[in-house]
Length: 311
Image (spheres, rainbow, N blue to C red):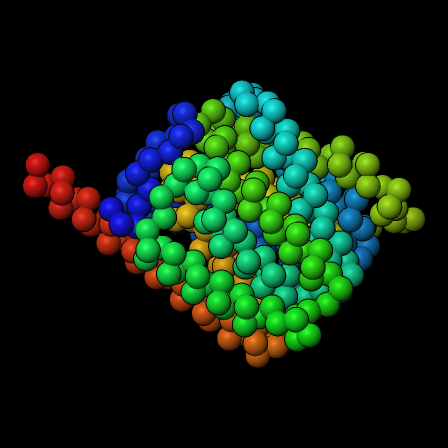
């Protein structure tokens, strides 16, 4: 198939069918809805608790939530080295985003910068996973990247001192997404989510000197927000792991754009954040790119059904 992936050098990774790809897309869309809510919660809590405490809360609450939701089944680590490396790299990404939000960056603006990730993921999946990316998927990815360029204009409203730091974090985030796909060959969603949550605890403790804890106990609203933040992260990352087990990185990459819409709505409702017109225009472009990719996966699924019926 022109848009599919039909070979991979990673032992244990299956070749996704069209039906699996569509299921993976649905899982990742739900995951992004959940994670966007979690991001809004921590951005709201950050002024009172800071970056390091937020990291620790995510780790403690999130790891407990994974154990409760799974009954402790499947959290044992198989690929310990890769789980640890992914966890630490992802913690760096998390801390960078929390720092940017604590510095006053709007939620939707940070998501606009993160929208550079799909092209990086698609590019890196070729040498790292051996994925074959068809021309239609390249078109959808490049269309989305064109939308990112509309948003990320140097000197424009979105370009501030946090932007280049976040762009480096986007590269690291793309690598962690690919490693999630690799880990699907050895570890289930429970293990992938649990050990990621656990990695946030020592990382948060290490960051305490740079981001001291508050002098006073946060209010009950902030505590509730942190509890929701931890549980939502646990749920979202189990969904992410399941999605990457079902579908290729290049099929899922365009859905990195989906938080733009929800993040814009939440940012406006909670903080009265109004994105620049260039951000809105770019968001429309990247959403269209994601919808096109979903359409292509449905076409591929229908073709596979016709091929199977003809046998």
